[in-house]
Length: 447
Ligand code: GUN
Ligand code: ZN
Image (cartoon, rainbow, N blue to C red; front, side, top):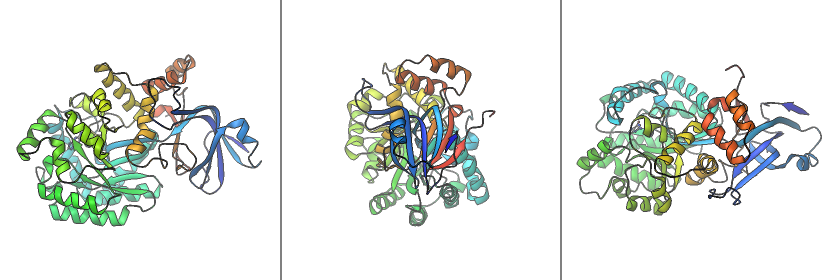
């Protein structure tokens, strides 16, 4: 049986998808034919039980399949792994695009007031639903998500994500100073609530927990110390925070934590650098910091739309590369201005150009898929179409808009096609999103 366009996906039956297929097995180098890219111009992806079981050339595979298998026809479109956004705040959905002269005033004027409403489970649930819909519309199937200080916000988020069978990483913010009373926990209550949430959610279905000290200025040393203890006790739990985003923030951190060699050194001191730790921004680091990130396997998350919007600074790709600091991309909504990882890749490209660096479309797609999965220690499970992976994939439409259709018709290489998709594309370029083999979003032509 052949169907055109989406199928609801059959979690336990076998479904085949016919399309161009693309994924990465390693970071692409300057030559795009270096073996890091798997591409099939007329491919078939076979999904069963929520996982990829096989992929390859359509004509060859078709002959090996049962005659009655459902083949979903996405010809002329491109299937890639679902995008991974490694830094985003769901409670900031409603304050995206709020004007402020820089990070600290933006936090005070918009962010903290918005976050104070998330003690209410009904509000949290309603925003979580909109947020997940929006991620899926943009083709993001996994994200590292900040909730608020209220355990209710995290409970609401995981409940919604679990219902949809999404692989999400999220955590309750820890914040016991320098914030409004309505957003403040204590070192002890923060640790207690985090541990209860870990026990309840980490590893439940596809949900995973991230210890989430907001950033050093809003945690006391006691809070960071307790967080470090939890990070050690629960070694497969994630850690997420902000680091070296803004020069004013840097000065503040120096006053609050005298005696540390650098901002990064504070997190290091409390045992918060390791695999499965991801720090947003990482702009104002030195090479000693970058090498320490590399040595500890800590992930630096580049958030280009946010850095441009808040005027925080330009991420240094060359220095990251020289020091082998692991990197991935994040939208950082609501400081970031788009939920779309395509738009985030475009911004990353443009920021790199400002320092004379060229990022190919291949390497940007890698960073948003396999590179992020590797950086998060989730390689083989997400970010790839390789057999055995969880079936989180998206269907990109090179004809999604008149301009995309016109430009991609003239693309002579895969690199040119991918480059046009990321520069000109956004949620409109995502024809469908599947997670755990289930159709989670299908774009209607009129929207
Ligand atoms: N630093 C501390 N909190 C935040 C936040 O919510 N957004 C950004 N961009 N930076 C932060
Ligand atoms: Zn952030």
